[in-house]
Image (tube, rainbow, N blue to C red):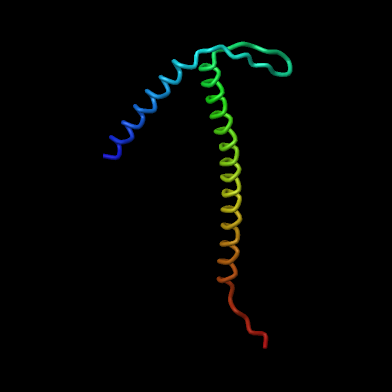
Length: 97
């Protein structure tokens, strides 16, 4: 049932975006520091959406890689500490009193 709702929502979003795409075909002038260009609004919006998605994915991936590296480092330190504790527990107890 949940998948049917997702499929219906996906089709509705697809139809809404197709309608939006067809209605926004006017040319817009994009002026930036070095130059300027004219592009249809609908293609410009799609390009910027994809660019933003890729940029956000890349930045999230960098954070994920950083967290994975920190986790691996912490696991190595934990294994060393566990070995040290095991070695200390295996030592015989000596009373010098």
